Length: 132
Image 1 (cartoon, helix red, strand yellow):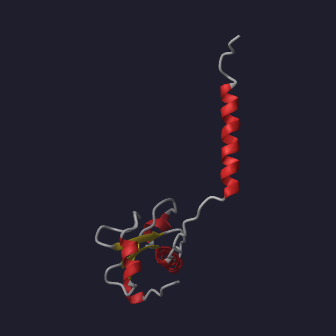
Image 2 (cartoon, helix red, strand yellow; image 1 turned 180 degrees about the horizontal axis):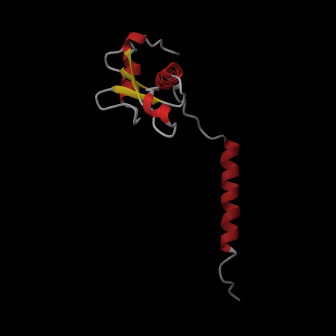
Image 3 (cartoon, helix red, strand yellow; image 1 turned 60 degrees about the horizontal axis):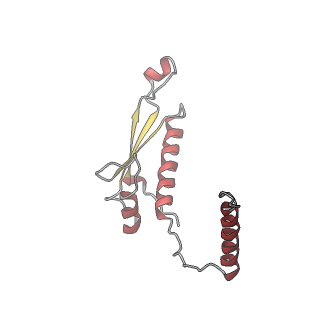
């Protein structure tokens, strides 16, 4: 179940990229910082709670997601990449696991387990000293 992200809830900031690139890296601010406030967003409360309790270094203590995208030389491509990462994070948090139904081992599996235990026991008992 995917939730739509409103662009008015997302704040983009252009920053300079890191790493090699010559003159271009010093002149052009092509990297993008995406900031998304979880608490003030229009996401369902269950998704907000799951996001806030996710141990992710991109989520601050104040509940703000900060994503930096700098893999491309184009600012628009970096924006799209940052949005895709945010959507992936939200999709992961909105995924609900089905309830676990406890099961019992079958009779045959119990018998196989006991058989292997007795075989192993016999092997170990044969390792002991022989008395004559």
